[in-house]
Length: 442
Ligand SMILES: [Zn+2]
Image (cartoon, rainbow, N blue to C red):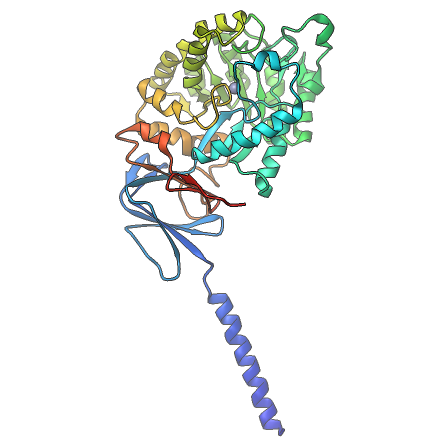
């Protein structure tokens, strides 16, 4: 071989290597396009016409008007459907679902049973179109484990942001020893998320951080479903709530509070919490304070109706039934007043008190309470994402965000009940439901 030929071969090899490299660079990543006859623009609160949503990997690549069919792309047609960003429920309890035996079972059930059940509840939630949830109260951080397994792909479910166990004072709404005999009560303390005083409150927040919680849930007022008699009175001092909020915010965690009574809401908002859950007896002063502080309201409106109905059917012990009948039906009226007063709402249902997978019920009751359908859809997308502090990643269909996309048959702005019929679910670019049927991904 002469030198010329060797040099020519080397040049050829280099050239072909360069060509292959160029091809590798130019070869577009596999793209899926979804043809949406209409697309809800959650940022603007408006319905767009025919749109093509481009998905690459786990993210949205771009959105274009009209029906585009790029060469080589996988096409998903959704005739007659309205597409929306993946729905977000900011108030669920994935490791629990109340049933007729819940109260007697409480002292006997194995922790592993709760965990196993949570995998079914998570799947039902995702298939109902809720691609992200905020879990606000669990047992022993089991939803931290659930979050990790879903993220790893071993369990099917929504993306989870979890508070771990809810924080409560002794005898408060989340003190599980309420109703037990003194002999069985033990002395629940910070390790069980029960605290008294600002110092213990700080310790519980730090324990939550250490155990992998994403946010904090606290119970500054009484509640319906525990066995205590106090359903709405304050159960934390302002000083205690402030200690929770300051510590949580130091660690980058937001604070959600369960609060029914006006005084507990007032203390919480002044102390700087990020959201008020339920808010049943919110008064005009609370409404003004929430607007001034930018505090979100998660109304859990259907749960209020549900617990009152269940109480009438004899589903709860007498103490619980009395509270359910007094508190439940008030929420519709509160929702109307808070909306008119300018409070910012995020979608939160309390699923687990009623069956998981029916998280759409709140859309119907919020519209009945007088909220515009488009606003209820924003609550469950962009607003819920803002409350989570992750609106840069989820809550809108936009380039660079997680490819979370769902579809319903028809236009929810004309008929909100179509939200109960989510028939297409994509989370992070993976299709879990199509044509109303679950798609096997494992
Ligand atoms: Zn709850």
